[in-house]
Length: 417
Image 1 (spheres, rainbow, N blue to C red):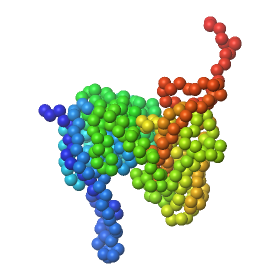
Image 2 (tube, one colour):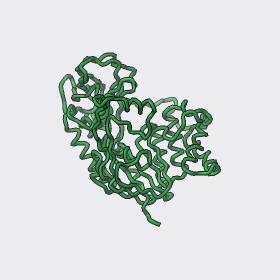
Image 3 (cartoon, helix red, strand yellow):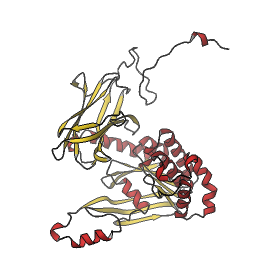
């Protein structure tokens, strides 16, 4: 038997923007397309999400796929999972595939959690008795015992994710494919999932893992490959791939924000620049403990005001570990009306970041529609500062944020009894 679990040969995927990407049309859509006059035909342009990607993954190996937004990672996993076919090239999969590509993939919203477990087992070709043997383990891992007989349409996104991952990881696929969706879960659940995926590879099965959390990729995967604009640019040990990816991210962060092309969103608003101020003056390197303001310049596409917008700035380490999530929604604020051009200011009292290098992502949405999302928009360097006013700098033994705290001795309880 070959020791290869996954083989991709010259895989390419083309999309025609303005064309339905699914394989089926509604009758009304087909009639409308037939009656549309030539001058009314929707303009289409080709977009190659992947171009001539090839790689092999051995049985029992954990393999990471990293890259910027729009690099083609999710498209590749959908091809590997046979959700969509490649435009050209070949995919060989030697074993049963379990995939977690999006929250709720393969789940029917009207069915209960229990019914969806059996449905997914049937899709994987398992007998009902085989699913039944694993049922309790799946429910316990997902921590949804109380709601297992509730239709999943009533689940929160976290519950949905926990059950979906538990199903994908416990029904013993020979090949487990996991996309970025683990970012939906909390930190404890992410650690639990990583532990489960390590168990899967320890049992001789294969894992393909996509994540922007490079620390998680480094923890789980032995080898990885880097995609850029649909092409494989590097493959090797995970450490070497991450080092090359971080260098490319820092190059991107040095590009003027208004000229960045690797952005996601409708474009109804676009960020034009991000600057950092301390005491009303622009600075390149704020210090730990300083009162800092992040200024986001923007412009709307149609020159009109924008109503009810939400914005976010996230601060991450170069390895993708989230340090700060500054979201207007979390703060209970909505930007009721933004003029066509302007600046949005986010104030951070006593910057709680220890000295080091960080990357800032920026985001804007309205009613669930992403208008602009740029990852690694700016690189931020924080220098040493006296956060506690004690003349001491924080230890650099691990990544953390700083908070106020006090120590005291309770004299009534200080003795040993």
